[in-house]
Length: 371
Image (tube, rainbow, N blue to C red):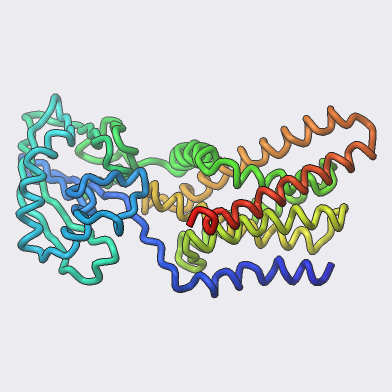
């Protein structure tokens, strides 16, 4: 048992050291900041201009390194890229629908583009658009174009400003131009709870396999509940630590570690049947890794900076609630099948653990098989 526990505890560290040279480029969401001045609406958009110019969709997490057009644009100096951006905005501004008592026409005012710097890292340019305010204008509604990934919307220079986010193709609620539309903490939790539940569906079988590894330890409700509690605590701590920069692992390390954890937990089920303190500590450590993965997916969505704690809480609750419900459903089905037969329960647990371990091993070697 001691050797197995040591393996679980050192596994994330070992994988981190081996994968340290690997750098996964992430694609931060665009940010739309807007405010009014006199009789004008000003919209400043922070975006990866090269990605949009190259026709890449951030929602697909594109391999920008494999796009010759993106690499060409990323190496352009500011003055050269500005001409590309100006030509792009002439057509693109029409797809960014802004309504203030009806559609308004946006005008290009300029763009601030950072120096080339490291071409392997994203460069966020700041695009300024303006539009005249209709007489008596009181509220704004914005539709973010399809194919452009998520966007964080921030109202500026008013009391209680609106802060929220949209997925590609979504439309914002009516936002009072004089302020006062800030989301409450409860509203933020509700919004991100739904997003967390949707994310676990996106993650698919790997997370479901983790739930199965917990279920097949003993097929006893108390054992499953304890494990889910420790996994949830670890995930919440891991999400918070990652969101605030205290625990940052690459997506490669996180995926490899979670897959290896599924294998280890499934094999553990074949050796030790009952719940032990070392098992709970191991599950808590795996929860930290899961929290880091959640932080990466939340970063891709874009959390409101002014409401980060409730966004983290809602996202974690939504994700973990679906995971726990799936585990409970599997336990219920197995209980019905096995009835009161302890022998049949044991056989199901062993067979299920072997299948989960085999699936995890396949996922670990799959990249090498494909290469």
